[in-house]
Every structure is written in structure tokens, then in C-alpha cells.
Length: 292
Image (cartoon, rainbow, N blue to C red):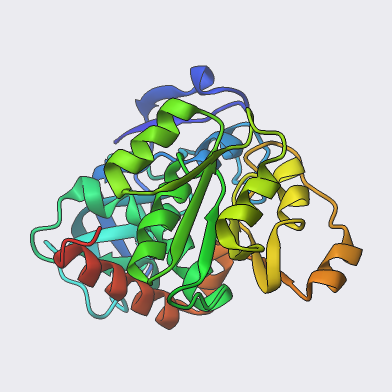
């Protein structure tokens, strides 16, 4: 079969497209013919050897796919050849075929395009887990979304609005921020590059601070977030797209009575597959209702 392979760590230009062996099928696995594969920031990190998971070389990047089941292991109950599924593979998704354990495959709703199914796990899976299980976001609360023009950022806006939150979106590009208003109706937009005192703008908009802060950026954005969080607020650590891992100022955490909450969707999905599956049932229902 053909695959896009990482044979030496480095930028995407070092990837090669060539023949490779079909992955073996275990008794609890399903084999998927890949019809679409999502591309996410972790894919870049993993080929540059900067991610927490380090598969042995050579490997194919690609952590999420959608396609058709073409083979079912003897113990992979609940799946049949021909099922249209999402596969959460971690890597090896940029290939004609991928093998995943049965608890990492989800049957897609009727009518869902492969291109839609494949983008749900990393961005929307992370976001539902973050806002529902980790933040326990309540209707009417202020949700501050950093990196709002990126993949997880736009997912946070959509899911936050469905859950009844009031949204403040930040980013570093006025043109992209304006698109958020066009696409999602976001009224409160803050550019943290052109407005160095953006934390004061957030406090003015929210009347004192955000109840939940969704931070995939890290670095100085995290530090300033602790200065515009509400009492009993929840600061969600999603990632470090800035490339800088912050050190928490614990005195501010004490004075704000707030919580800093880690969000590691991959670990959650592996440890709590039933809850993760229920989260996807929510996403599927929202998609069918036209909310996503």
C-alpha cells in the first residue's frame, strides 16, 4: 500500500510518498480503508520529534481518519465490513489503510461526509472534553477562547455557543478575527498582538473576568490569562502553540481562587472510552441538528 512516511525527523518537506507494508490486524482490531485524513498541529510536532508520543521510524503521521471497514478481527465485536467509521489512530493515518483497536473506531452517522468525520476527533473531541468534563461550563458563563482563529479555537467557539456560554475570542490577525464574526457571530473580538493590554479589555467586556479560559497558546498568553480570570474560574491548558511552556504564578491562582486544569484528550479517550464515546454521540447529534 502507499503511505506518506516520516523516515527522518524534520519539516514536512522531508516526508516521502512510497510503498510500505500493510499493518497487521490483531484480534481486537479493525482495518480501515482511508477515505479522508485530518491534518493537525500534533502531526507537525510528531514528525519533528517534538511530541509526547514518539513512534519508531519510519512511520506515517496522521492521527485521525475516516473510511470504510474492510477487515474485522475475531474479537472486534460490533463492527462489520462496509461500516463507515472514524478511526483515532494517533499516527499512521496518512496511508491507504490503517488498523485501529475497536475502541478507537466510531461508526459515523448516516450521511456524514468522510471529510467531516475525520476532523472531529482532535479538535472537537478535545473541546467537548475540555468544556464538558474539565471546565463544567455552565450556560451564561463567559468563555474566553485564545487562538480562536485556529482549529481547536473555532471548535471551542461552536461548542461554547451550543452550551450557552458568552464568548470572547482572541487572536493575532484582525482579518481572521473579522471572519469569526462573519461565520459565528462572535461580537467580542480582541487582538492580543496589537493590544498589549488585552487582559484589561477582557475584564471590561466580561465585567471582571472570564469564568472559563480555553488556552491552546501558552507562553505569555497563559500568564496574562491568570490576570483576567474570574473568581472560581477555570483555566484550561489545551496546548502550547506559541512554542513556550509557561510557569504558573501560583500566587495569582491563590488570590483568584481559580483552577488550572490540564486537558489531554488522548489520555482521556484511552482511559475513559465510554465517556469519550458519549461525547462523540453529542457531536453527532449536534451535527445532525445543524449546530456544527
